[in-house]
Length: 161
Image (cartoon, rainbow, N blue to C red):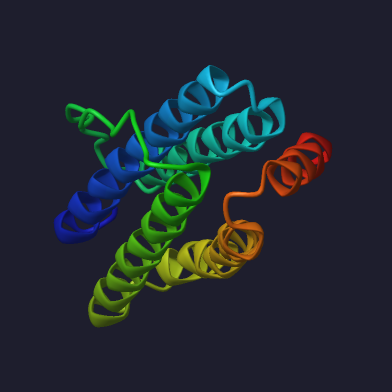
């Protein structure tokens, strides 16, 4: 049986992952309005991945005999000043999630909860990839500035991912 403190942290993380999916879907809607289908594609995939992460935490908590307690999901931002600003927001959010996962690992280590430590290691590794992916596009968008041809090229790149 999982300890209550760890259960509470995992429940908070389920909400964080569901919010992340909601945020990425909001970003996809923003890019739909700009007719940037590649950007929509990337954000849709991120949203689906965040739902998968929420499910991993959910299933893990159930498997450990914990109680899943779903809370309200915060309303996400819906407008950004530019595609760069949206991707900077995505990158900042991934950094926030990394901090949350690291905090959870600290709690698991304090509780000597080896099963949760093992499960969280996958998420720690995943967050390295998530941050790198978001930052890659932040850097690309910074390089192209407000050049529409560059934006078109990035959009085509994102359509392939």
